[in-house]
Picture 1 (cartoon, helix red, strand yellow):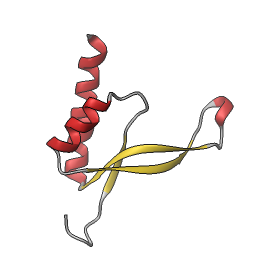
Picture 2: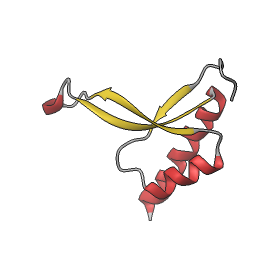
Picture 3: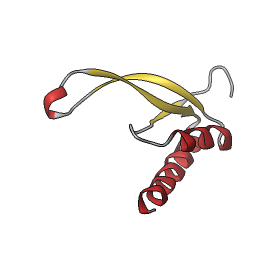
Picture 4: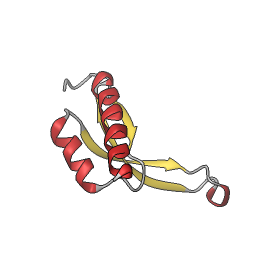
Length: 78
């Protein structure tokens, strides 16, 4: 990836299997990064939590999102 190229993040929902995170990071041109995000849940409103995200080019991140959701559906349906 070029130094000045715009990069995008797709948050990894808590509970995603570690095996899937590793698979995606090897299969796609993305990096796994940590991001602080404010929570918007009833009893945690305003709290911040460190979450993982995939970072890469927009088209790649869109493909990662689609793949991740497909794989999570397969995992849940087992």
